[in-house]
Length: 112
Length: 116
Image (tube, rainbow over all chains, first blue to last red):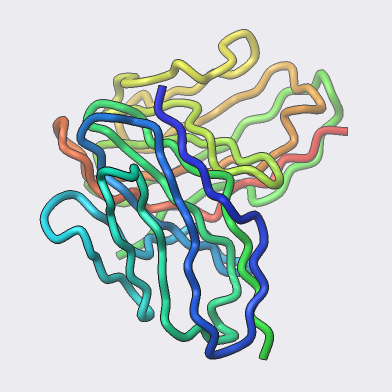
């Protein structure tokens, strides 16, 4: 069964700092990869996704993620975080005809 | 477009009682998912419907949990009887999926269940 690991449970940054959140998965076949975000008091929403093509994908609000197939990784990055980026971030993996597996999430706190 | 609707938003019950959650997906979305999210963990898929058929219920505790989507639109998830460890947020999501390809899932606000 596929699994998803997010290395950081809680990350605390100051505004303007750079962000990188790690995500590794165990499934060896063709996968679809997602990052979802949950802002305080709101529901999960899609930040970005990778299905095929350019392994560097750009999402909303200046976020991007890079798919590295050889490392089974899909790390999320943002060059300069804002206070409004405070949220919980979930990496998810889906293989065709398989269910979606989510990581445990990383809580990001951005200090103003 | 209207999002995924869920009700109730909060529910507190005692152990061994029954509870039901309702979900109305985005119009036109063939696939509906129920997830359980325990505090500090990511969402765990309980059951996936495509139209009114079950695609995957391998992680649904079938001795106490049941779900239906009779007309292929809205869905109900039931727990009977509830245990303390069922305390969680129950999320409903929907996607356009009409075949084997993968589409983005849209999530509802969730129902926070507390079992005392």
